[in-house]
Image (tube, rainbow, N blue to C red; front, side, top):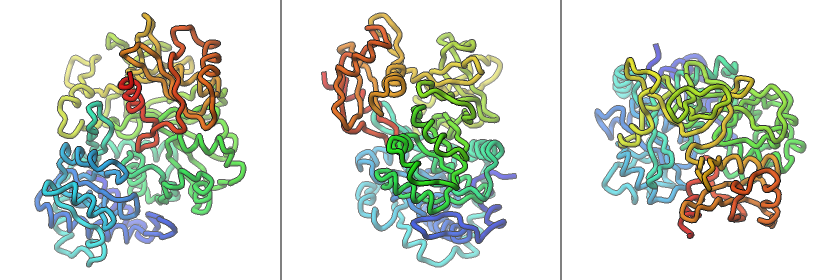
Length: 514
């Protein structure tokens, strides 16, 4: 019976100790080396925190093999890891530290001074080079580690992932071991994943996709090939790295994939080993998706959907039929052992074709937001369809409907549904039209100026596409009340750490510049 990530990892370690677990810049680390480094760190952590268990321990360093060793080492110590982004402004890092109050911060020499200065006297800092260059964990260390792991249960926290918060301070989503068991088992069975999987890891370490990559490595002996995130600025070199490292599985946010399609790079750089592509996190414009599918006929593509509060993703759609460029890709069906409820404003189940909020129940649900009971209570609520016993659901705030084929289709954010001039308007519908139907620009974001009661379209374009051109084309599709009043062109729209367009920042800009 498995109760933690380490149970999976230890089983894989016994089965294939010499198999490559991590590849970084051509250097290969096998499972034996990975375990040795992780155990060293676990012993050092226990020496610092004593009896502390099930507490967050932060990791502050550039994504690397050392990051993976650190995350696994924290789990060996029976604590939960929380990866921090070194590119995040240090004041924001300080706000996270104040909220989460980690038991310890793990860093490397390049970041030691920076994070030590911010941590001050609030929390201790441990440098990984001082640990990894030392002697292996002793028999006494391992006895202590195993005793701590023996006390773990599968609902203990495994990690904390920070996501944006409306107050400006990120929310720390707490995930347990059990929820990852479910998602890992589902993905392995559904997609036939095994030790031959070689994952091209591009997502930042602070993103939930990286956590899944760690789990697939531990659970099935898969290999994580760390891709240089700087390559996102040079997509051709990124594809060359995929080809040269024989990557056969990627799980990416669509933004970079859109750029690759627009540059027609797959016609120049062949990826014969790529067999499985997952994409999630934002809408993948169908035109660019169709390009990928056409250029990689040997590859299976799956659209995954889900906020981090339900542990990675809760629905999936394997694309096996043709889609018009203007037709949105469905988010599909609920993953195994996850139930999706589509509720209307009266908290009743929607009929097919009726739009409602997507809510989720099951073991995939996060434990809540760390040190934030108010926001936890608002998002994780009693299932309104069940009055017999306590049962929580997570309200995603996303609006969806079920089409005539029984597929769930994403419509937009509940908070992007506005009431304007007496009409209910889904701002995402305008974005979809600009990108997929009119194909005027590659990226755009539509926000609402609440003070001036104006719909504002912010678009990314290297060329001087005039507002008049966009407005003229939109009038052919929408009634007057849906046409944006203000248009703002940017060379590049702001992105979150995970690559998504930063809608909150754009909304704040529009509503502050009255």
